[in-house]
Length: 289
Image (cartoon, rainbow, N blue to C red; front, top):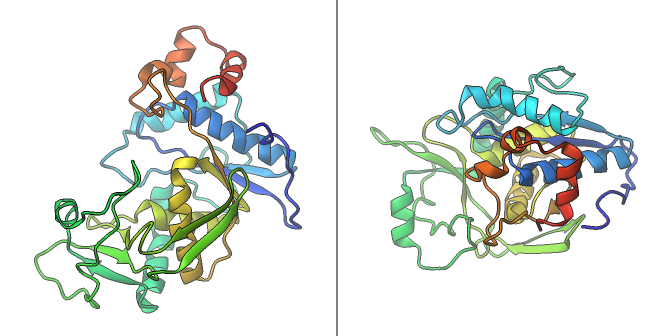
């Protein structure tokens, strides 16, 4: 991680990075470190940093977290040029206001026969899957519904699932971890792009927004390396150029577990209440790794 402050990008276009928090709980120190890397890389490349509020999953987020999220980010020292509170040419910056873009992308995937309706529940998949998968990642889908071509499904909920090209090597060069290779159908399987409750899944919404907002580099946690392989397939299917990627190592707690929003004592809000300063917390970025 020593080089994340520098390494300017050799690209002709204007650097555009982003922060993409979800209002599902208070931001913690792990979020802050990843976001700080994103901000530092944008500054090193004389670029633009935008803030996108990923508020699609109404079953998980609470409205009060949206406001505190902005407050905590500002308190910590983050500055963005475009976002839900400042506007910009790619508005709206709340994902809940961008449904038209997601529907258009879904229709393009349907027209290209890249997706199919899947009626499998999580329990169905867990019972059918025997192969191990990475901790925190979804199991490789066994293809139960792959023969479905049209949503001729009545009285039954279904997800739209992306059909991956089995056996194809998906590779990319990560700005932090170097060359990455994942085999479609082995390291990851067919994945959901649209949920049964009529909400786009993370993979699709992220690709559509990063493409529409002309993001040139995505900075996020190393737990999303496999997701990047999935998203590269979506970029290709939608005819969009993928950005560059920089995945950060995850911050761990004293038990060696990665930080999550359940770690309230390490939330930015709690740390502020305890008298910590943004400067002192940034000094811990190189300790809690």
